[in-house]
Image (cartoon, rainbow, N blue to C red; front, side, top):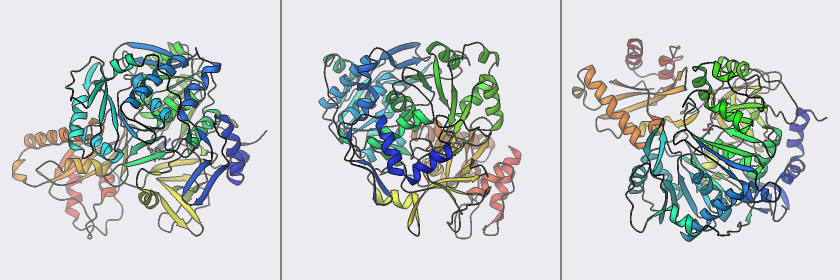
Length: 632
Ligand code: AMP
């Protein structure tokens, strides 16, 4: 039997042989002629010469063997709907959507922006795009008009697919007004907006631009739309993610490499088999939703649950009840969700038959030991932490249980996944740290394995300058995370090296929040930092300098301004980015060269020693923050 170490080693030393074998897990119209073309580093082209289609691999190929098996299981505890689509039904719905998009002028390579709640039509739209070779760009439904506008501008979509409303905690959240505002803000205007009317919020339709999905679907009831066969390197989608600068980056994914990477991960990491049910509690607006609600499970021939609702409504047993009902074998969630469930009645965990479940995978943010222990004891099943990013599309660090059953270690997402040549680099010298238990920046030597980002949408130079450094003869990708590796090869992630924060598993750029707050007419300057939080992992904290302090003479006026600022963030970026608090100071702690000392602010907020402050310009600035934190 191959040990994991041998498996991983081979993926690097016999890269083409290894991935050539994995490529057999998917269908090809034309077989690739070259496994990896890395002649122009850091740009890697996977499965060159191969011709395939993502939607074919996720849907059509299962029509032969499992047409009547469940493919998409939609459960909404918001609208009390539950509907199971077989592969045959999913195939029909996707074709109706594909035909509609084509009628709206969408062709191969065109972008389609999807701003949708967690409803089946969102899945149909994604699959319809890849079916016809269009490039989808899903924007998380919790983002508001400012975030949406910048993504529309960057993606330049021919069509936007949206809905009247989402729902949260039983209350409708109107999407259309946010979309209309975003379209007003965006310099780029799509030709058409396709709208799903759930009957939850009124929609003002713009003549000529806005079209309703229902009548178009009706018209295309029996339509046949064949898959558009595309090169393996054809982009399948872009997904925006935050970084150091305010402008989000469009992570661009290919087709063939992504299909192979997902199929292989379903086998080696998630151990999901065709005919079983996968339940990922994420949202289609995030990378986990792309890879492990939609494409991964479907490629593997599994049924996938798409859940709209909260984990605690109608009660904290809802997810466990779905495991029982649909005999879920693989579940994927985030530590924050488990921390929320931990506060519920523990009896709920024992109320349902969870015997079908093989493992629970958790990712997106650090998994703390008490949470891991609680859920591991409660479920009596392996809990597998795995670490990755929007950029990579699938795990960088995990325990590949399908290869060998290596033990997990609390606090560690495991070992370097096959295909990833993971390194730790010294932050200042950039040199590789080879010893055990040394802290460095988690990095990956190129080429990145299949499935990872090809480039930043429309900006190859930004891709290279943001992520890559060269050490003689080699190019290294930075994850922007700190980590250490122990003597057994297990990694521990210690937080971001940049200004990205992680709130409840949602990645947010502090610069984006700062830019949004700065739009308030009385804000001169602001610093936003991530501060440790027991439930959400981190929350955003803002410290603002006002232009006219006489306007906030007392606590009541400060609170009022705080409220106004929060509303601006809600409206611009979405409640997901709203800081927990906005506090007011007369100056921000800066170095003499004018760089804001965010790390020192974070430390003070977390009650830690801010470290070396010799470069600080005026110590009174940090003292103000200390006083505010002490006073609460
Ligand atoms: P995203 O691109 O939104 O998936 O966020 C990726 C970032 O989330 C990583 O760079 C890490 O900072 C963090 N992250 C993801 N998974 C884990 C994990 N298992 N443990 C610790 N941090 C994680």
